[in-house]
View 1 (tube, rainbow, N blue to C red):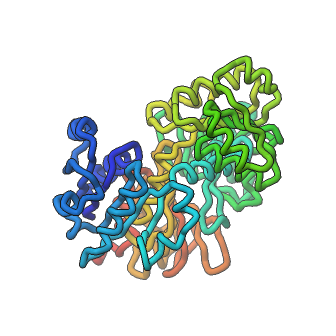
View 2 (tube, rainbow, N blue to C red; view 1 turned 90 degrees about the horizontal axis):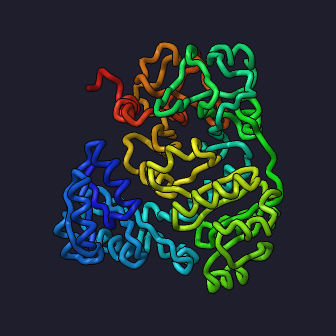
Length: 454
């Protein structure tokens, strides 16, 4: 695919790096001269310096010949103008834009066919808040994702020392719990990522990802993790957009969180727009303030500021002072990989959450959704089986599916199945596939046509 990315901040850079590494023809438009120099040293893509709202710059980038335009600058207005210009082309590309201002969000009609005609609107802060809420509602989970409109859940948790499965294989698990309707689809062990088979063994400290039905999600935690309770004392540090969206969601399920925010003017906004949330002016890294707010009684501590280092610091402080569980907003990959080692329970990346939505439009086949799992090592792909694809018409045990990938669920009409070796996929079935990043291209080929078509 030929893709233009407007804006090379954290999200734009991540998308450009990922797509170029997969062989896509990527052009990045970036206004800042210093950032352009950095990009030329770190990305193997064509870079055009200038404003993404400039018709001449977009023409120089080749907008008339691209398949997709992804506008992710810090300016909603620039992103909208880039999308409008893309819509004037005779070959109208797919259009994705980051739009965050609540005034625009509250007028969804501007994103429709008559106006911007966006295929996807990215709001990293809102998506991050939604990711946090999923893990808050299942205490003990590291990550929670929904597939098939919430009819299947993926739950990731750390294998605890108390789990009976430590030292046992996946085959042992299936024999011990044959009727649990839980299918393990990935195991992270340090820097190693495993798409498991029956001989895969579990070790203390493994990060285990399993798919199951919503009503069984907590059972995954009981078997592999340590579980926990939601509790009703939740403290949020950072009253920016993520903190605000999160507080709104917590209020919607009947909770009354606290928010600590440095900026007094922002605190006024929060106090005026939140109904059940107590808003405090202060610094989340202030030990005395945390102790005054009885941090030792807090069931869930959530750091959502724009400063990753501050998020890590206040989370570690909260944990040391007795907070039961700490969730932290972190975007740098090098920080994500070290969180569990230093004692942070859950790390959420707005960057990765945004990339997941975009991948739906990149992957080949009839793709319904894509989820990039923790640290972007594995993708969960929800697709529709095509008549010409290599995955239909035979039992899974006879299928030559790419190594490093497995089928985690199959939907036949109203019936949702966790498959076994005898499951047969028919054309039109919805299928959820989990695959290592390096296996994605082989999976795409399997989804498109049978080998005899090549």
